Length: 274
Figure 1: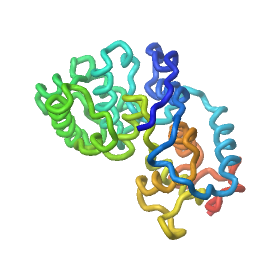
Figure 2: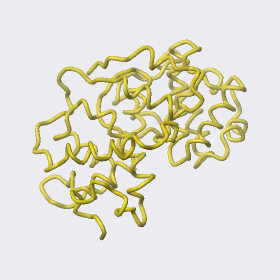
Figure 3: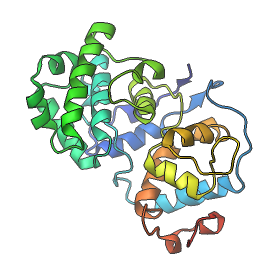
């Protein structure tokens, strides 16, 4: 597995008021080192460096507190034991799926205020209570069930901690590749791959950065995009590309009617103004 260097000052920003702001500070402190099992040499698309730099410049003019990703590291995360913090990261990451940042933050806070952000507490809690506390996160009924099952697994197999590998995380109910990689980064300070959500998936296809294996067709899923992107993107870009493209995707390269006229890198985009 890869190890990453974590800037302690950034990881202890417990006084920050925004979950997303803390995540951004943490992400800037990660630097993947050593060879990666997932990285494969591939031909990089033309002008990718200019495009990334252009997007960074566009994003640098935006208020740093603007939400750019919904993971789950709340401001109290550094005041609890590591095992409990990691479970909190996993639980909140699960809640964040298909849910707006402020809704995830509220649900996580309610769980914490009720002493229910540990595997033991969730395992003992009534599922109906969990549902009420996390409402209105997306698919809250299903997620309450997932949390109960995950808590039991963490207690039985990991002594209340969470799995420490991508493979084991993916065996948990409701955990897909994006959540697994995100939890590895924030929970274990270990970069094993790129976190690809719908924004990263959409933008990489629009830019022509990824394609299906052996063809020029667009990738169909975020996981296909992750695998294709890791063929050529340098490892030092694996962590920062997610919040960068998520922010860009929310503000300019939106799902419907993207603002190509406001995009400084549209000249490099084969999908611009189409």
